[in-house]
Length: 246
Ligand code: SAM
Image (cartoon, rainbow, N blue to C red):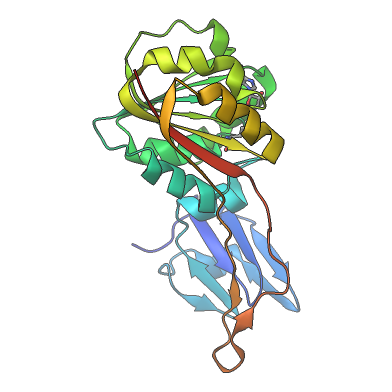
């Protein structure tokens, strides 16, 4: 299906990517070249115009280049692995707090039957909702602007949970209570001292604990001089996973 007015296009140049909605008057200048609305509409995704590749965006590019970030986000390299470790599928109901900019929620929502999510800040909550609406995501997410500690949640209801807040140990007993037996709970924490504190708090509540971090090393895709990029994102956060024990 050719690209139409209002479609999203991932525009790739030699060394940059732009996620753009194509509307009349659109143009983009990069280097010495300009790409205009008229040169895009009617072309197939995958076309090359001047030195620009017109590509169909996937969820990763939407999150990285389209989402407005008002908080630190969980990067796709962590988010997709988190979804896998939580063991969720279309029959799962997943609990998540805090939503932040809604990046992880967007990934969980693609795999789960339902995501029930909480965000305490009104500003961040509104921004996440806007991000999802802009890109038509998260239709199966029930989001509430509320501190998770105040949420009324049914006992042994959730198949999995993910917690991305600064002091997750404050909510562990409640999380334990609302998870089904043996369900997985994951956490992302930026510092090792937070991880230590969480591990201590998990004793007696969660078993099979795993602590890890994911390093993604990108390469310059030049076949005759294949080598890693000079700069990498060396740290995003530590991931902790455990399963509810009773
Ligand atoms: N995972 C998010 C993403 O991928 O976009 C980013 C989460 S951000 C680092 C942490 C969020 O947790 C903040 O937006 C903060 O307001 C929220 N938060 C902190 N404590 C909370 C609580 N008790 N209940 C709900 N949200 C909370």
